[in-house]
Length: 466
Image 1 (cartoon, rainbow, N blue to C red):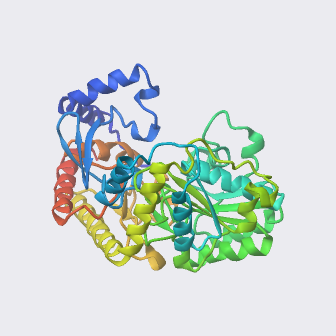
Image 2: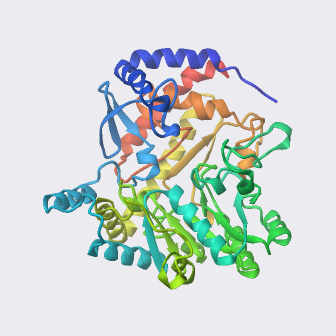
Image 3: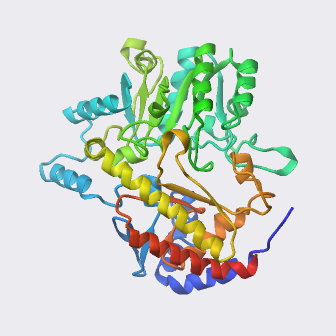
């Protein structure tokens, strides 16, 4: 196995970054005294410390040190209109000015309008709002188990469905002892739960058929991202997604499409519909919320009704204090309405900018002597895509077909992708996370040029250590 020692480079980058951002460093040290690792979301707490953000508008951020950062993280991939888009902030301002927007603890007409809009754009019968994608996927699985009376849950290796018990298996690839995607990723999760989770292979129809033959009569649900998110930014093939629908129907299994990332990213609605696949349950979040904390479970009435009186209240998906929060739904209604009304223009621009970003990054890095591959395209069905994820091959002709390829430390350089590049680009005032990100409609051709030059300068720092 080819290995590279980046220890000296990482130390050099960390020292340069500490000099570059002393205020963020000071705030990080202060934060560590009162918060675990200095924050409340582990992924965002990059080492040696994250930039502390003071302002955000469009494609750019300003940190506490006064640096303007070109941002491709974009609100954890939720801000396809950029940071603080006026179409949302103006709606919130009007609500607050009219004494509406903070928590009331009551229902209102806004919930009805937002639910009607969501159902129209996705084809769902019923919807219930919650506050995070993690909760949405958890409730969808509970509904599936109640509906079928079965216990097994199936997902794909590399699929991320939030930090909830049925999702904390098969997230990271483990090359040692051929473990692959079969490990449980967190202590404290009962084995009585994780033993009921079957991990299949993404875009592997043969493996999927085998798992259904073996477990189909016991499966409650198959939860799947039609566009694999943090597992590699890759679309499901048409053959695979349609096989998933046919097999779940044949065996009486609930098909859950987790579209927390893909929903409203490729069109003003769900991505599954672009395949001609209608799931039994659909989970949504991120983009639909317009930058506010809102998520949803939507789908067939007979399954959703298990959470209500018509289904005997068998599933305690009763919501939470901040479910369907007024400000969150103001933002969601404004965002989904805007996307639907301007669909062709918005998604055409995202597709064009996404392709330019992927081409610009790969060209810049390769011309500076760093071989690279880039995933994130929409593939045969989804078409243009705003996303990118860089992968650095360690061997010639390294395959790039599935998570088992690009996360294998013998095939692709994990340290370069997940530690070195991020910090090298941050020193050039560009923010990506674990070598991935997304464009928004507010990115410009000039921004893409800035990204390319940043990649070239970062590559010149890195090349001597390869």
